Image (cartoon, rainbow, N blue to C red):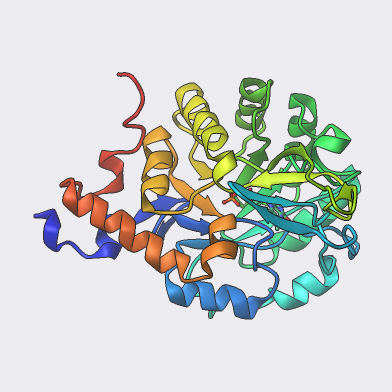
Length: 313
Ligand SMILES: Cc1cc2nc3c(=O)[nH]c(=O)nc-3n(C[C@H](O)[C@H](O)[C@H](O)COP(=O)(O)O)c2cc1C
């Protein structure tokens, strides 16, 4: 009797101890900059929303242009522009009118910074905290600071979990050669789950008329459809290795079929960034409808019936 089931009952998803109306989650860095936008996303039916990554001090980010669309995706070098911890705590002080869970995103260059942001986030109404160790284009952070090693993951998790009891998600790089070690370290360090993946990079596109790279910073991270196979394979591999760790599969989800694909790879939540920049915030409603329609057509009444379905049994 799935044909009459409502979208919400088809898509209901349990993640970080909360029940989400849909697995579709706003990825970090996309519109998550103000509370009013988070509120709007909650109203439109996002399952959860992730805020822009926050550092202790405000960051201007990289010079313009910072984002460029190309055929199969986008390349960006935003460079973690953000208002800093003090302003962010003011902005997100009261999240009671955001209809869906909010995920904090925490970045730092050294131990004290991770500790300071974690302690402040602990007092906010975030349902979980995501820690990207994987940005491919911002000096001092992520891959450019070698935060994408198992040793760094263990150290960061130990610092952050010393300051907060909130569920922690490690956001891993795309196409990581050491993915299984990063997953082991996340698990041993007490992470509640993994977000897979960040943009892949460094990438570069050159404006041949100007004879210069398009992006102000030169290199950037690639997102959107070009990234999807890497997000699917990372999600599949993590689920195979650590089936008990929930995954927020992220990368190239542009429609309902893409979201179902990540769930069949083993994802519990499905992050969306480029689709929201491309299709607007309505993407959350449209893609949820597309998922529900596919489920009704295929007699699936609950996402648990297809989670991990692509794995050889
Ligand atoms: C313009 C832009 C800004 C981003 N900023 C952040 C960020 O601040 N923190 C972060 O963890 N990821 C950031 N990301 C990566 C996304 O959260 C996501 O992992 C990536 O874009 C892949 O998903 P997508 O293909 O659905 O866009 C950013 C991506 C884009 C396109």
